[in-house]
Image 1 (tube, rainbow, N blue to C red):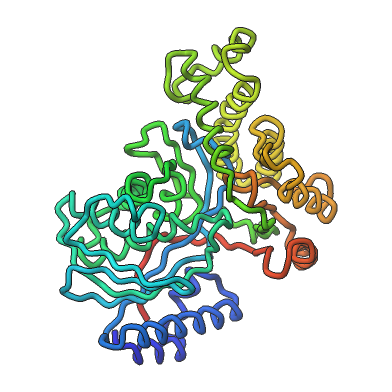
Image 2 (image 1 turned 135 degrees about the vertical axis):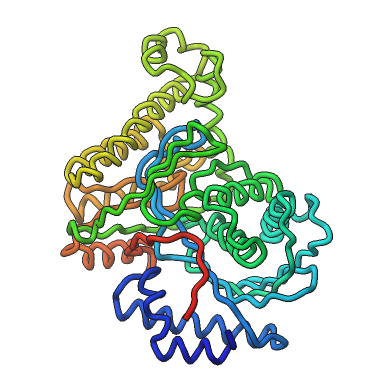
Length: 428
């Protein structure tokens, strides 16, 4: 589509249906997204003036609902794509080069003639693009180049998985243009994980990428990590009277690598006592009977984290069942037990290396002061710093957002909507 044609279509409301699917029915949200897309298209035209035809793509962030730190043990999780996303204005060309400029960041250039791992590129977005291109090429996809301008409201470090959103975006662009959409959501997720693990240099499970690729509200069982079981749900929390709120507690993720690495490492140390690699392979009742013998062979925290895994894995299943039954109160009861387990057994509310920095614990305390002691609030995602999640009654949402913003700064608290689709091309 021509640049001006797309802008005119946005202004004329011809893209409103597509925008409502991604961002909800609120006129304010639609108007905001129209401005955002027009800005992105205009910036693309400034940066890449040689192009007249464009296409628009979007991929969502994600929020974890249940199954805290279970995926890396091949467990179960409950999560949802959200209405915060990364979008890209794209023009395709015949050069063997991908050029992408992201708002607030410099230009990335990836030569498709060299798809090998570049050590000096690790930790960069260029590594992600190269890794995704490499994986598609390895399955026989003939990849061409493109120029793109991207902008994201999935803030880095927000716990909403900006990296998986970006991976899904790039995978979606290549899959739609150069692969005739032959690669399904499961494979898009695994391609993103491969790029992150091998090219970017960060070990990660498959949860984030799977949710971003599938979209919607999903239950995932990672028993078979090559082909996870994914079931989509359609429970509407807003209709049940609740808003899902995420608050950035402004904690720094720097110097927390040891905390994150220790969680799967300690869980695996327990699994090895039973001759297994992952806790999913260990019989829960045998483990519970063996706790006295495990002490001394594994550290105390590892044993407690293993207990968390077994109980949390079952809670994720029970949460999904409660929502399937339309029983919101049963869901919240399980959710609160999950929150307590993360705090007391998993112990990922703050880093032991920074015991005075407890933004997550402070936010949970504040949430309970606002919403009551039985508030459905918990640490969000990996933990140790970052975000908390709360289900807030609709009539208390304005007050909650105002008070959390007063504590952590304007714009810290987001009212999140579950997005029903994953990576998509937007057509006006």
